[in-house]
Length: 176
Image (cartoon, rainbow, N blue to C red; front, side):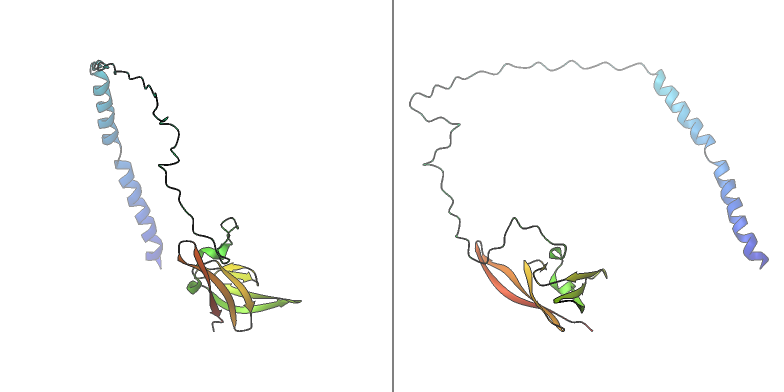
């Protein structure tokens, strides 16, 4: 029992002795280096290099086009593929669970409040979220379309090719 009380005191005492021995020699060496550096004569400043003049050029357009105006004939017009009905709205504010992959979300239950049903979803960090029909989940613009006792049904919007979007059903089942 006495040994358990003495051991921490002995460790603290040894640390104090070690720290007391540090510093004086190191500080003296540092002070000597600083004094030696201050005693050195200042170095000279190298002269600036000579700047050679640049030959100027005057542009006389005559019948040439203005180089600062885009040439409509030379610039190809980039055709955008037509947007289809499933294209996600780029201006819609993203919801918190849209940055989480669907496979890292677990449905842990439901909650009924009046006519509205909520699903309880937990992420990999153990944080619990309450979602309802119309909320968005996952990385593919997945919108919840139905919540049952056993699963959350949603429609994801995925791109087949640039400008071509399609809906794909997805579910998150109740985990036990």
